[in-house]
Length: 418
Image (cartoon, rainbow, N blue to C red; front, side):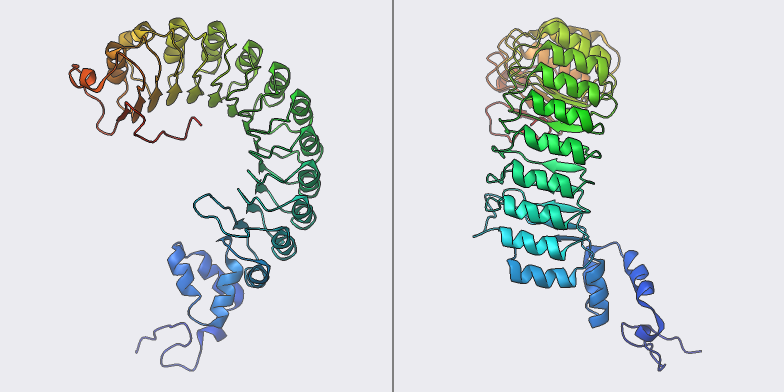
């Protein structure tokens, strides 16, 4: 019996065509089992029908297009879930994304769940209003550094996109507490919120947020210089079971009340950034390390000038899953911080350690850490007068093979602690 070979159009030796045999839903089922993106594109080259099906099943698209092309794309990719129109300094184009583009997107891509508009500086509140009215299924929106946006446009998004889970607004300097009030009233499923550099946000806004959003696991308020212990402590209490990442870089009004609230309420905390929070005491850090020791993985506390040898020793002994630690510019720290580690039998999990500008730490202290950190990948020792390349090369210990040591800033820093 001769075997029949199935091609895109016909079955060899037969009058039957595969397009006559398989329904659209059956072809979609076949396409859903194709894992490679390249193979999915090839699927669409078989014939016009297969191209149409491949297009309607496409879920993700990155594009640089104006309104005319966006309309064509909307007609073709009818079930698109994710659209990336982000710009960067190295990949910007003129005039960039406009409000007219957003109107087309709001009307054409009605199944959209994820929209990335990072650094699209031309869009205004009018475009956001269109998004709020048209994309009711939206779950994730990034408008970071869209500097023309105000409460008016982003509140329209909050009111229209009630299923919003992620919202990033870093660098949107005109955003105020009004947006957080709108989110609290309308977006009860919000899990991730980025507000870095939104300097008009105050404690009142955080209290609004805490009153309505209880599922937040990631909150970035880096450089929000008008928030204090009052607002952040309310966040700690409201998000006690969900909060895993809290970023407070250069929030200089933050002190012990926030750290103690985290210790009391947020036992699942994994990442904490308090760099530049100079009022945090050594005793508060000990309380945090004791309470969150099993969960904490990333801790940045550079420029926390009250950090002592005893508090760092407590962090290293209690936080056994800690993978990244920044203690830069904590000038009172000495090698004594690491003495407890040397007496421990178990190894540390540290992959990233930054001790730049710690003038009292020497090669001896680094040797203790290296001996206990077989997974160490990055060590920053810039501006440490007693730690030099010659000193480390002559010491009686060996770095893990993959470890990079930054002596002078020539090595790019990991982003995990930013």
